[in-house]
Image (cartoon, rainbow, N blue to C red; front, side):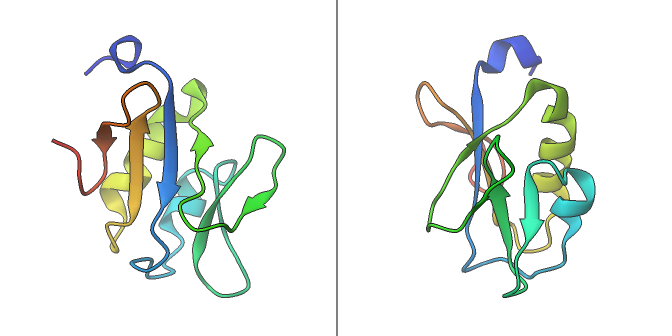
Length: 96
């Protein structure tokens, strides 16, 4: 799927499945960060850690490859990337 076909994307992490490996934070530190509890969270565009359950953040187009690779490589299968318009998951464990 080409980037233009995806439209605007958002990403969220299911902390109940997070293993704390930190692969996501290595791939895309602008989007993901490990907190003091050892789990990964998404960050806002203002670099603020979003700790609310199910919190989403926009996927910057420039970081789409890194976010996609994070979802693919995550050992906990807890990173979900979906289209904003219809909330269909395009990368992650529930992607078709």
